Image (cartoon, rainbow, N blue to C red):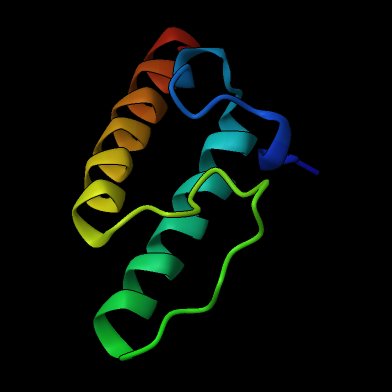
Length: 76
């Protein structure tokens, strides 16, 4: 299982495809929470998405999607 807490979110190129997928799903869930709820759940201090606002999450999501595309094209 990918443990996102010990990974550096600024170095997505070091992540494997499973870790990127888990991060993408986590970000999508967090974005949905921002868009559909007036109060967001408090995240653990070790969570790499802690203290990120909606715009920051969308920016990180774009980077994750790019990293996933690059990783899948490398493995072809």
